[in-house]
Image (cartoon, rainbow, N blue to C red):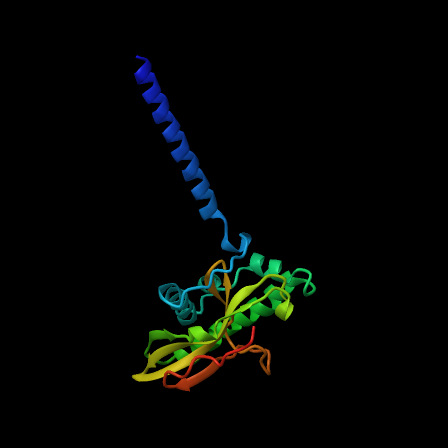
Length: 208
């Protein structure tokens, strides 16, 4: 009888541990990435980048700021990076970064999809151009990976064309858009970055 009791207690202990782990995993999954600490993990240039850019293309095609927000750099992460480096980082995020991104979604849609048969072909990126931007550089208190000039290649009315995504930066090993159109830009309107006939060339290197 004592043995049976021990086994039951052991089973109850295991169940309790599993339930506890499940609760912790659920809590972690529910926490937005931007609210979690940064890591130095370099984001992949494989399937994860393709997934992010495919989502971006869908956001462009449908001029969906809601969908676009899922691949845009998280506000809590931006505020953490900029607090103490620039005044009012939340205002800068909303009224500069997000405002330009929303304008750019519409501009890219107009250039690529309106009045045309357009399909997304691939993402071209130069992994050697990725660099770690150390804390203290470029008015940032927290480091991150940066890659410039990732190209989105399309077939538009039977012709290959491409555009650039000006800047991707990392948070916790994931690439996010921080500038879709060029930064800086000569006029504060939605602007397509480096539209070209043909696939174009990723880059150039540099920036932050």
